[in-house]
Length: 248
Image (cartoon, rainbow, N blue to C red):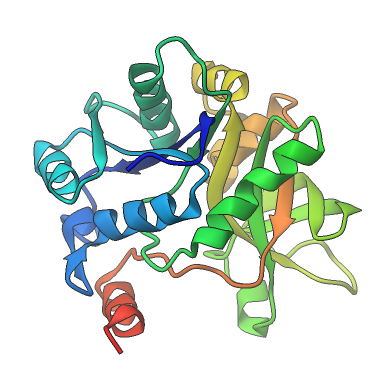
């Protein structure tokens, strides 16, 4: 079910191990496993070849049975970015694809248009990677350390250049705060460089992988979108996703 540009890979990392929600990628949502639903939404975005990267034969079998591509990767990766890069080298050993999207496998309500928007900043600048954010309207989210905020300077209509990511309430003073969405569009050389780096000082302090890229001098541009796709991390999140996506 590959579509879109041959120069773009859309890779969904998925593993069974999850402390808070075991077997999360296979959780049933609206009649299909969550990882399959994410793959379907990614295919509808029509930006490139879609595949699920996993170390689980069970996940791979389910994905393939649904008509999507699955790529088997090592089981010792420290992060989804490492798994995505390994999958990219397997799928495209000649490096013909210059852009690699990392779409998390636990966002079953992601809209195809949101995935498309993640690629747009790369066409408008020399950024090494691009990501997404939503303006925070809920006051409680502004001080919630589980909500990652992106601090950036405006570079165009609906676009920021990221200066920092933090769990703190920032920046100080009047003006919007932005909720970061963990979906990344990488230029291939930047991803290759990123996975070769050791975890950085601020990355370890904030527990935010993207700070490794900033600390290494990479440019991250951010597209502002309208809504945060529901991420599924807990049984309560799963129940909410099932309610939202239940057949009407």
